[in-house]
Length: 446
Image (cartoon, rainbow, N blue to C red; front, side):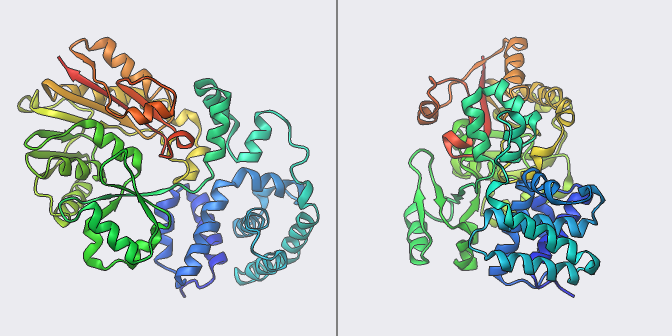
């Protein structure tokens, strides 16, 4: 039977994600397909699901103070029920306390864990009584910050060493915020003025950004569902950071461009529009299925200049591909520390999982350099906040490849926002630039 209760949906999905270490956004989208939730209940369930993942360290700190047994010994459904309820108590003030506790107890019974109902009721009522004093004794160090912002101490120490105390605190404040929704218009189908008028008629609050062409910020992005189906190919979701990277590339009509790690293909679509659908952009991925999806997206958007190819960017290119392309997009696999707001579970990954990435990234960048024509542009980017994957990779590349030189990025307002002079590289920070955490560096082949 399809799930009809938003709290039970969140509990079951959380148990599944934590048991199998799945990506939250993919797992949640799949899980919702098997529910019978209304749109309003889906919104509540999503808030609970992502909120618990975001605040897991904080919630478990509170639960450990009031549970009479270690959390790892609790049944997964009991533990997730408690986490969901404590999240509501701490971060959703509009829900009455009594309703939160009663729903948790009723839910645990519906989940066939009725023997734990008294335990759940007791723990939650004790937390309610001590709610105002829960964090009074937090230490004034990284452990205290870890609990307050639900971020592992390892990551806090790393960001402090990389970016300093002030920016680290700003990053911690930002990782649990809801990111802005950005869309990029398909300029082959519509114009800023035409699409803005449609949004206004539907009551969708929005701003057209002046810094980047055809970029819209939406205050309530989910309302795009109100637009008729025929308008779906007029826009697509793309964070402003990715749109900045596409703008920096400087593509013009008639060029030959290759995107070596293209899936899911958003950057290739945007660059094809800067080319006015004239020339060729080759979007590559190692998986044939992803290439098929990218090709279909291009067809749906009316982009005939985009072609796809199954290709491993870490391997040497064929001789006929060498020095063929005017511009090469090298958006490499990374640790994703810049998109924690969208994929909150990334914060809990051990740094040991990232140690092989810089060498892979450098290999991809070095092989991609073979594709660039003399005078052509090579652009490197990641969605992470980790100098080892960013500045250290590109610094090594410039040192070992004197045939390339730095190419200035044409985005003065974003440098000024960070108090920097224009350069060939920039790190975009969520609290400063209101984008995902992102790194861009550009080079020109002499």
